[in-house]
Length: 407
Image 1 (cartoon, rainbow, N blue to C red):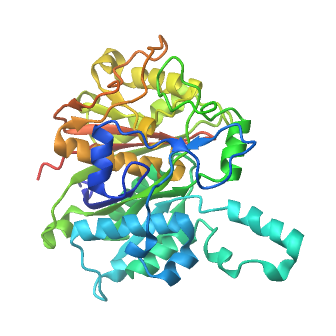
Image 2 (cartoon, rainbow, N blue to C red; image 1 turned 90 degrees about the vertical axis):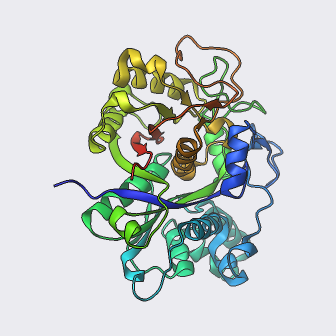
């Protein structure tokens, strides 16, 4: 028995290079850099002063003031992206179908709000704690706010596998729809990581780009990743359901693969990254010779980029040198739990437009990173299947196979 086909019928994006699908895609293929000085907090005394912030975001365009206050920045991004995805999908949600529509979002919520409130308790007392923080900091509240806004009553859950969360949410939704748990799922990721705690802690372990140096994936002089923020949401549904309602299909989520390094909290290993990619290919029932583009995790750290390059070569052999590989993080920064989902959107747009986005800020080749990274300028390329990698700090890995819909 053939597995249920799961397709994408709507997408929405809030990102450092654009707050719509159109602006995001225009920025991506033109090599727009969304990285700049941090404005969300005072960076005096911080070793890192740059990030990829979302600009000119108005939550009032997507939700009422009451929801915006209760949701917080992370959930606001998710709601906005979900509303865009809903509009593009043409899906009508009502009492007849709301219990068959779910929400799966990769996110960490906004845990740094707890540190702020702990300080308030210490300085002013327990009675001065913000009562809205309960609905703002928890990861579980991000899909809850989306579900409340859209009125969907099916599965509602958050996924947190660090930087693999965006792919993980899409893969989890894929399995849920295949199993018959839902007809439609809003799947994606949301992150609001440009915060004092996130910047300070990640800089302390040496993972962030030094000073004001931009993100340089696969470049010899790369010095770390740059935090970004935003959200991307996709409307996933069974092909049968999409056809019944006459929806336009944008792409097929063909397969997903997961693995865990079980080796180190911070240092990735090759075999399990290989296993995640190969499992995704097997799940998609696709030969590796059919993969024509790889959207890399490509963080810009010394270790990640070298290990990912070696893992890709282990999967594809000599053909790895013929496959374009690029990293969106050179432009958007690292959106954490949202990175995989925004990169899935990039893959789908690229397939439909026949364009591979570039890896910008690429200046000096690294002998350890010797693949075709589409340096600095986007490339016209018709491709029908791609692999998208997301690898989490801690060792969680998730790869997706995304295919052009063939009808």
